[in-house]
Image (cartoon, rainbow, N blue to C red; front, top):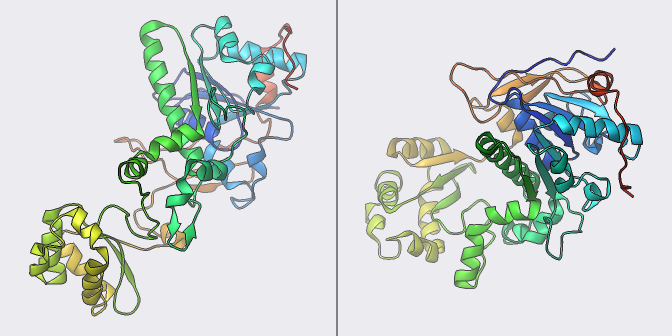
Length: 391
């Protein structure tokens, strides 16, 4: 027997979301909605969201899937099947939000285009997530995170001087999912005034292009893209990793001239550098980065990492360690939460936003089609309606 569908609490209690989703971008958007109390029904193929099979590192489950699908209800539907499609239509007539990230054009061919759906339910907010958006010469191209990292130019400014690199997380998916989440919240607020939904289109390319505004302006303003500088900032200095006596590294960040003078006086103990004509402002420090780094390294290489950290802390200069993921796992500042999964409990990172007096407790990660029977009973029986083919 399928589990009983429990009501939720939270800021979005009463909001009903249907999502025809897979992978990362769309599931991230709906996961944030579910975390806030929305009811999210996840439509999966009979073989399941392919992210379920990415790996099995999280107590036998996929890391991506448990991160992005807690708190959702899962039902398997074949939208080419007349009865299953009718069931989906019945859900959409009652839904507040519909999110889909099918291949370009597939939703329209299946009879799930945003304009058609909103004719049937004027309060519905539709969210189409794609690689490149609904218009333009790339609108029909399939897209995944690494492809868009490359296409957008992100990889050209990521990595070391030796060569470009991929950002170590699926940053285009994440940017897109968070952009979609914010857009849905805005649309819900607007609908509260007008009573009418709207169609939203969010793409991986547009989302990461927005995040690339600063390096793009540098390219267009100077004719040169920011250099790949490893653990350093291409346009703020000093802002990067410096080696200390014994081989340890400390990352420092100087954001303004006051900090630079204080750093020179109290950390380097060379106050004259704070007034040196080559380092008077950030642009000069970037232009003379080699000479500046040589002077910093001369001091740091003569004292231990602990001594450097103590001097930085006493001077009120921002700094950090160069940690690996084991360092994150054991970090005293890391906040955790435990989610139930079909294979057992998994420790996740707690959401970034904290609410006073509330400890976040994630809802369970669903098994494939775990809620199928209950959802069919809730929304059926239905009368099939005609539709176009998805093929």
